[in-house]
Image (spheres, helix red, strand yellow):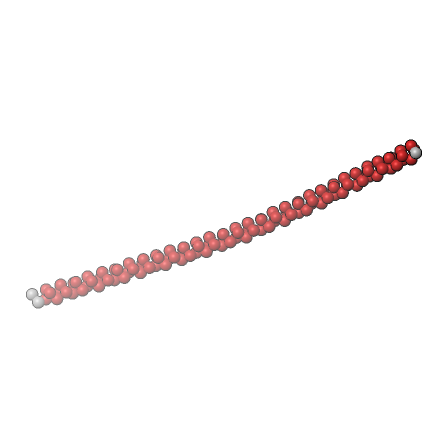
Length: 111
């Protein structure tokens, strides 16, 4: 009868050790899964940041190129307008000069 309590204690101790080992193994497995998940999340986050940075740089480059094209077009348009206005002013000046000459000649003819 004395052996029976010892056998029960040994069995209980063995069962407790098996449960502790199983729990430890499960905890280590979960830790590995979580560590792997964190690494994957970090890698994904880094990939997203890199992609966003590249996209931002591409957007800035495109905006800069657009701005340069707009400035060039506006400068060319301004130069065209100035040239047209200058030509129109010269034409008007010639018409007025011609009119003044004609008026002067007409006055001289009348006098």
